[in-house]
Amino acid sequence: IAGITQAPTSQILAAGRRMTLRCTQDMRHNAMYWYRQDLGLGLRLIHYSNTAGTTGKGEVPDGYSVSRANTDDFPLTLASAVPSQTSVYFCASSEIQGATEAFFGQGTRLTVV
Amino acid sequence: AQSVTQPDIHITVSEGASLELRCNYSYGATPYLFWYVQSPGQGLQLLLKYFSGDTLVQGIKGFEAEFKRSQSSFNLRKPSVHWSDAAEYFCAVGSGGGADGLTFGKGTHLIIQP
Image (tube, rainbow over all chains, first blue to last red):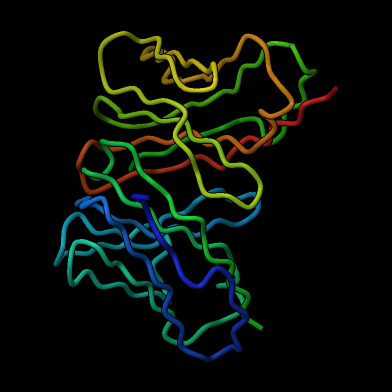
């Protein structure tokens, strides 16, 4: 079944540790995104990529990094996790950034303690 | 920068009653507008979208939305809600390929009363 796969589904992480959230899509979409969802704040864009090889910063990029080595994969890395990064993280993709339907993964629930 | 406002954090509607969820956007050019629904513990699913043409758009699950440029609004409606419609609803505005990407509102939590 085509779509977005995120891993892990959930994770408890000690503060200061490094963590990479994985995201893979099989729809050959050009654009990919990482959002964090927090109660009362909706979805906030962390980083995006318009096409393989390019990335950009969203609304809340501090403490996160991304890479886009190929079309399918868009990992999100927390270099040194802090409790404020406790959130649900969603990866998404679309054919064209901001112009076509975005398809979402099921999310990764991350707790930093 | 583009932005989306959903004025209602929570809305409670009786089953069978009509529904309208409000969405106002801010964007300098012609917007690409979307409504998504999120059931508990799930990702987001697209309900409908507007790019151009007829300002009344039909979506899945009996939902529709009307684009009103003069009011910068894109309100979501349903004539008769079902208990299964209880969920979180997000309005989003896209830049149509521009650098601003896809920006979401903070969501409206819909509660259905029996």
